[in-house]
Image (tube, rainbow, N blue to C red; front, side):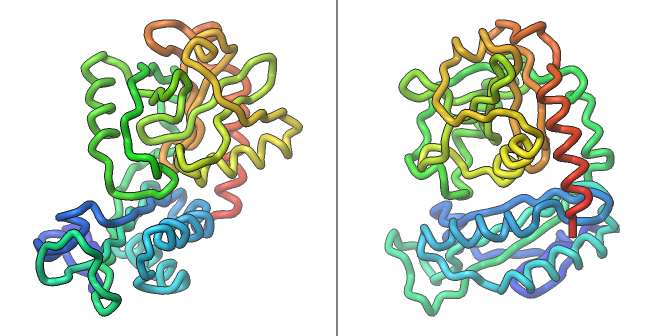
Length: 286
């Protein structure tokens, strides 16, 4: 059976889905997106994703195409139609099709484009990598300055993923002015002396939905969290490291630039946070 996708009000087989060649998402990367995980057929931290979507749209002066309630209904309909038990729902909003190519934003009469699709990932929460840990390399961070807006400008993160693949590791961490910013598609952390250290929120990193939940849950579990910059050298000398994202949840990191972190295997802090996060998110899923 063909996957059913959503395009501007219609549910369609993916082969029939169409977006104009003049859509600004295609021509200008003038769009934003969100990815919400699905566990047990339910959406994880959906409210967090809709709040960030609204912020991204506001920062780009882009209109929301539908209400939050309508978005929830669309997500649930796609999950049901595609029989997704574990996986993700991808959502993208662009400034739409003004009828031709122009650098200037079109006027408000142009309707935003809204597309969504599902990705089925059976056993999403049971990734073998959570047991072995990820290996990463560091690469220069040369992205644009507004990384807090979740735009579809993902060429350099894609290039970083390929750099990691060529180095035969799992991911890349970005470094700017000597300090780690974030991973190619995740927020990053180190653990030293029981203290969790992560870069504070700013325009330089994405305001991760999983990040916010993990920091809250860590505090509730009486874990100390320190928001400050850290270097690659600090990460290599840390007791543990991990990253968070909507699809990886909490993922331990055991090596950076060829140097083992801690004992070179997943540590207890990351393991506990992953356990707490998955337990709490399953309870709160909608």
